Length: 131
Image (cartoon, rainbow, N blue to C red; front, side, top):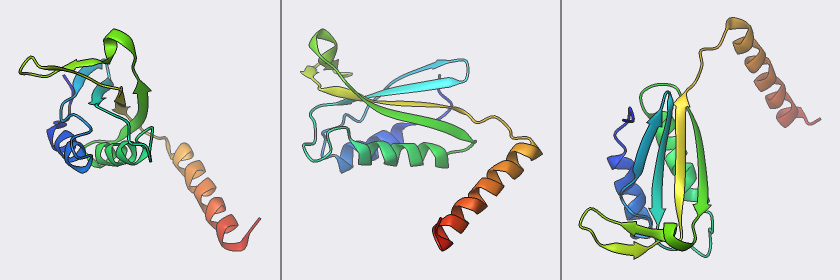
C-alpha cells in the first residue's frame, strides 16, 4: 500500500498525453520504498523517454505531504511483458512503462544542512560573478 493517492496524478498524465499514457498504475511497496509502473501505449516521437511527463510526475510527488526523494525512469518493454490488461479485461500492447519510485528523505543534521546551504551559496556566487 502506497501512502499517496496517485489517481489525480494518473488522470492528469492521461489527459495531457491525449490518452497515450494509461490512467492507471501498478503500485507496490517494500518497507519505505514505493513504486508505481504507469503503462505507455506508444512513444511520443518528439520525447522518446517522456521527459516532460516524468518531470511533472516527480514535481507532483515532491509537493505531496511529507519529504520525498523521487526517482523516475522510462522503461521500454518487449515481448510478452509489453501487454497491458485493464480492469475490464481488455488487453492491448504497450511500448513501455514510466517507473516512479519514492521514499522518505532522511532527516538532516545541523552540520549537513549548513554544508548544503554553503554549497548552494557558492553555486549562486559562481552563477552571478562567474568562475
